[in-house]
Image 1: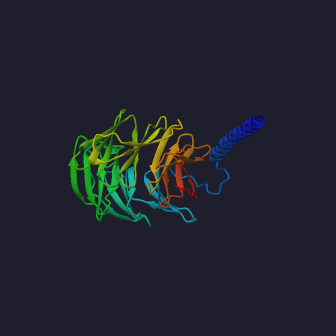
Image 2 (image 1 turned 90 degrees about the vertical axis):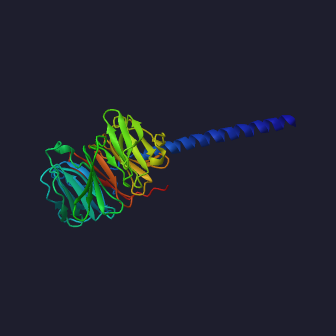
Length: 348
């Protein structure tokens, strides 16, 4: 009798073990299948659309609303409606190349800076120029460094620009220069101003970048071997990356905790050169653009890669989210093309 019980116990144990192994194999097979599905090129997916080539290389783009793009092409700013066949709206006025453009919080206005030494304020709905600043003296410093970085104040009444000389603050209504703060520290070409105006990132050539407090110019942190790419919408985090390897990292930026290392999130590196990355409008997602034509969506809370989008035969030079966070637009500078994916419905 005992022998029968022992044989039965062994049989049940073997069956349970085999079932466990079978379940593990099924789980791994399912994971591989899901991974394969996430990597399928979206050649025939209706979410993906191609648009006609721009007249000049595309350099930067942002969504105005969920169906309208504002993008920089050559020396002009252009507005393109995605669902309408009407011609693009061209924002004309600058006499030199545009360095940067930024949108106001309500996206009804845009500000541009140019090597002609002026800022211009635009109505994004019709392309009308609302104000022009007095030209900055272009003999003081190289033209390509003028008024390079821009940010609307959260209150919407002032704009701050930054360049090799320091900060300048402008009144939005007429772009009158209100103040200028000179500093040897504020080398802001290719730098970033936070949306809340509390901090800025200053690249240190071939070494990384400094995070500096805007009020006193005090260095809050130094992040080595990475380039600053984007602030989160609330200005409390910054996305930094090694552009050669594609490795990305999110840092907490808190002026009250100067000098403390606060890396809060590592993102898996696909070991593909990175060209651009940014947060979604609500800060919950990240999107990255890579030299192999892939656009990757990430969870900004835990670093999980959510989707890989393929743009065959292209390189993705820049990328952005729509205001509702369910569309992604990328551009290929040399090909002069813009590509849009949409209808995402991620669950946090």
